[in-house]
Image (cartoon, rainbow, N blue to C red; front, top):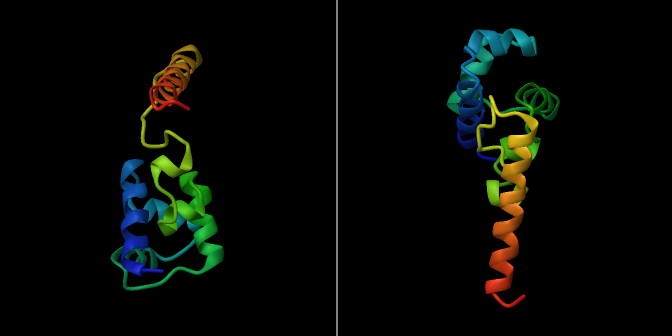
Length: 109
């Protein structure tokens, strides 16, 4: 595990939610300096704390560890669906299924 990469991913997840380091540290019941060191790659992360980060950010531990990519995960976690209602989200899913079907057809599968 590369501490710097993990730290960058944690920082990106925190910033995506517009949360301060202090807020996250308080939520995780850790010292702010510990979070700062993790984000800068100066400190590793133990499994129990990794699990807490994943729960807080609502992602998998594999995502934090860099073991998955958007394409591999099968999820649209990179797509901001905030503000869309259920019908609009279903439209997006149907469109994705159509694009997948069309690609398979064009490739002769």
